[in-house]
Length: 148
Image 1 (cartoon, helix red, strand yellow):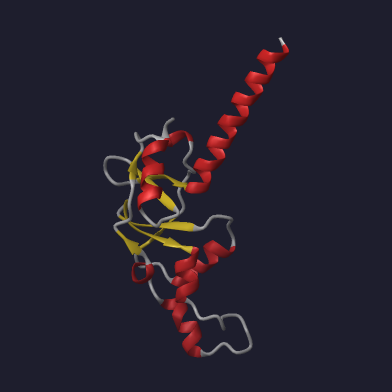
Image 2 (cartoon, rainbow, N blue to C red):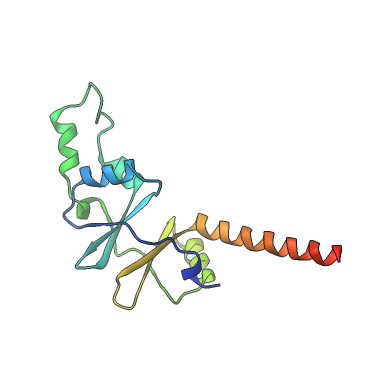
C-alpha cells in the first residue's frame, strides 16, 4: 500500500522567518496539528501544535497578558521548529511509515519528493484509519461470500 494513498495533501507550510503569531493563527483556524517549515520550497523543519503551546505564554488573550507575553508571538518559525525531521519519499509504502513510527517518538511524517519538496504529510492516525478501512472492506467481502 503506497504512502501516497494515505497522506494528506495539499501541505500547509510556513517560511523560516514567519512569526509565531502567524503560526498560532493557522493552528487556531484549522483542524490539523503540524506545519511544515520550508525555505525556497525545500523542507527544513516541522512545528507541532504542542511546540506552539510550549512557546507562547498561557496569558495570551487574557486580562493578565503583558508585553512580555505578546513578545512571544514575534519569535520566528526557525526558533521553535524541529530541524531535519524524519521524512519519507513519495514512493515509500505504508509499512515504511509504520517502521518509522515504531522507532521514533513522532506523530507525523512529512512526505517529500526527490528534491526535498513537501508533497504530503502522514500521521499515525491516517495509517490506522486506512488499515481499519481495509479491514472493514475485507469483512464485507467475506460476508458477501458467505451470503452467496
